[in-house]
Length: 112
Length: 110
Image 1 (cartoon, each protein chain N blue to C red):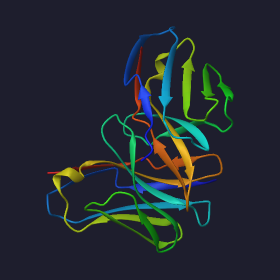
Image 2 (image 1 turned 180 degrees about the vertical axis):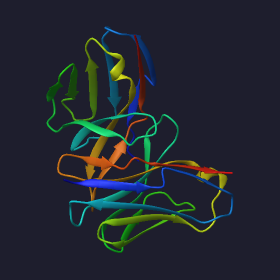
Image 3 (image 1 turned 120 degrees about the vertical axis):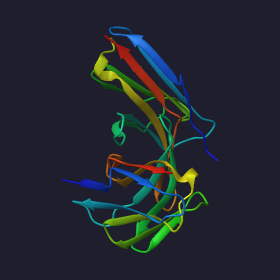
């Protein structure tokens, strides 16, 4: 069974602070996706990283895929209250259908 | 554009009653479709996926079943709900860049 461990599980910070969320696995994934979810809604895709060592930037968010394609990180610079939400990483494997294995989630709260 | 519709948004059902949650997709043909369940504030657990009409793969043995009677329709069912079936159920289809999720159904079994 493939598992993705996310840390921290909960994070509460002040507006303007920086933070990093980690996603780790013992399994290799063909790619890794990050989603953000708000209460009562479905997750929304933020980014997909495919190549080991790849770094992608989305405004104040920086995503990195580990060289061995087993881990990833999400770094947010100068967090804002609008960044509050549940962040989920998901590893992609290929079988009869592409399947996502989701991490346990990081609940981020940014206080004004 | 590709869209996904899931209903109802909330549902309260007594133990032992049947369940039917429906999901439809627009703007794409022959999509891979998925049903997930999510515990509060946690990750998603894959329940079923389908690569075509009538083709259902189950990931977790449980009290639920899924069907795909039409190309863009995916249904999650149960004949008799258990208290443990309570949760947030999400339908999704696979697009080119990633998964697109429905807005979810909050099921409470009482």
